[in-house]
Length: 267
Image 1 (cartoon, rainbow, N blue to C red):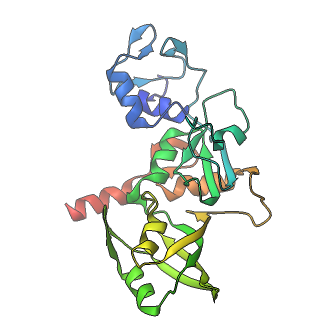
Image 2 (cartoon, rainbow, N blue to C red):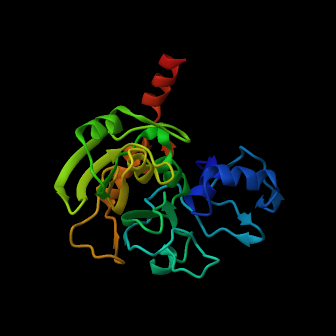
Image 3 (cartoon, one colour):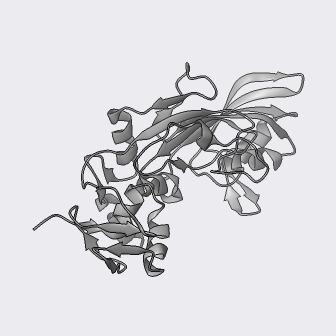
C-alpha cells in the first residue's frame, strides 16, 4: 500500500497556504481528489490527482526538502504580495519558481531592514512563526533619547503593552549614545506586530533604525547587501526543521514527543 499523508499537509507543503487555510479550503469544497470533492482529514498518496480551484497540483512527493531563501530586506519595501499604494514588495525581488510559491516567515515593517526568510513549505512557515516554539529574533536597534539602566531593567523584566506583557530576553549595548542616539542589540522569542519598537516607546524613547540580524538558527551573512537574496543550503534548512520539531528528512512527519510530554505535564 502506498504511503499517505493528510491532504492539508500536502497542500501546505506545496506552498499554497498554511495548513489552517487549507482546512478552510477543503471545507469550502475548493479541493478535489481523484475527481471528487475532498473531505477534511482524508489522506492522499502521491499517485492521486489533486485539483485546487480547478487547477491540478503538480506532482508531489512525501520526501525531500523545500526551497528556502534568505533576503536582506531594505527600508521602503513592504512584506506583502501586492500594495494598493504601489510601493515595492519583497516578492518582486525573489526568483520565480515553477512549483508552489514563496511564503514569508513573519514580516518586517516598511521602516525595518534586515533578515527575512522565505520558504515553499507552508507547514514549516507556520511553525517558524508560532509563538509556542519561541524562536529567537535578534535585532540591532538605534534608539533616540536617553536610555537609563532602570529602563533596561524594566524592558528585560517585562512591561505591559496593549496586547499583553512583553519583554526582551537580552539587551546589549553596542555603542554608547552619541547626539542622543545609542545602538543596542536586543533579543526576544516572539514576533508580535512592531513589538521591538513598542517596547522601547513604552519607555519614552524612539527607535530611529531597526535591523533584524537573526531568526532562530539563521543569521544574516555580513556580506549580504540590502536587496540581495541567498539560497539556504540543506544543512541550514535542516536546522530550521529541527528547531520546530519537524524531521528534516521527512518534513510532513512531526517529531512531537517532547511537546506531547510538556502538554501532559502541564495538563
